[in-house]
Length: 112
Length: 109
Image (cartoon, chains in turn brown, orange):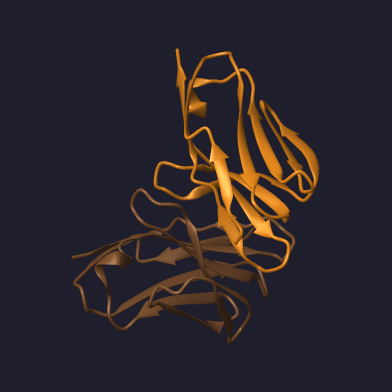
């Protein structure tokens, strides 16, 4: 069975500090991977997706970047956090383009 | 651009009754997925549809790409059905997924 893990569970960071959030999928080779973000009280927004290692497509510009260094790993990062980056970050995977997505447990980020 | 309008934003049902949630799309979507939010904020899969209808227990979903909508029907609602439900639609032309704003369902005794 496939499992999806996100780290950290929660993070409190200062404005201007760097950030790295991680997502790992076990039990599935070559999954499509996605990052989503939800501001408090807002709608879930797709940020990035990756079809294969080393390739990442941006959907929404939020001064964030994403990378896929390994087949089973997806990283979301920024060098300088903004207050507006606060919210809930979800990672998701699916088998291929026409299949249901499965979501990880999420990371709650608070920027102060 | 691609947008999803989800309604109602909030819904109260008495146990044993039913109702429907709806998502309307501004453009043609190739598939829709329905979720329920868990206590921690993550998403539990309910349905994935590229067309037609699917049923699972007391839940039933339909998707009409041509008419640009999807529905989630709940029948014989139970207290444990309370929570927030979301639809998410996939654009036909891109890999973009757009979420609805959610429906907060409260089931009353």
